[in-house]
Length: 386
Image (cartoon, one colour):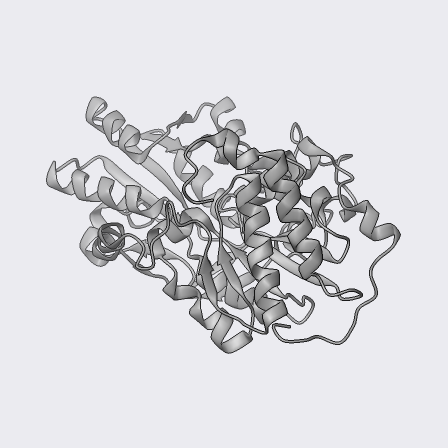
């Protein structure tokens, strides 16, 4: 499959049916398999293309904390708004963050109140705005996993080399491995394997996932984002379980390399370092799970330049994003899903982001998965890989 060059071939119905048949043959009768797709991009592919409907009832896919917008806690959004509303600031951000709620509204609300908030598609766009507005402070709201951290790192290096003093970064980059560790340590969720994040893995490679297979006995298959990618990733996990193996495999051979991207990793290491602790929505504080600017780049650090409030804000009581991000519940099991919480009026970040699980369920079929609720497959003692 990795020799295929065109998108249509990754959506071939005949190949999809063949993979679905292989998955059904590999599934042990009476056993329930729970696999976590870590990345929000996988979640959207699954429900946009109806991948779940091709799987046997024994195989359940649950989503993890792989949506960077969804895991940003409300307090950090409050900090962003506090910076954005300073009169000297032009605050730049990716579009997904505009409607993320905080205790003080959203960035869209701040813009309506008069803040100069602008959507950009790259941190280099923010740097250009800084060049064009030398009398204003331009701040870039940096979010994302290791996938987007290299672009922030390279922009920091360019800002330094060009001596652009009115540019700074509000750094909220998070790292995927500590979040997976937190999931594995969670007492309320049992998993059989992981569909590993494709985009993150283009940067970090395969080696960081080794502990999942080695220490926890769970197969990991890094997969692409087309329907056949997800199906083949699922088939590869079930084959490992059927053969009593737990290793890290790479389905996404056309993009992901064992060593990742050394140049991208070097740029991150030069400009950023690990935070001691960082709060994740739904997962709480996780040690060494996020990045901050190194001391050598403190002059480009918005947190240093503007002394953000740094307060912790509790999520709305009605919102169950935390349980959704941990895979404990499905979006449609949340009490406000599709009623009080919609993409037009979101309560939680999982409904805001284009990669959020709640948005995927809402946009592609809010009642997906109810066939399992109506008649769950009985649990049996765990075998190898449980």
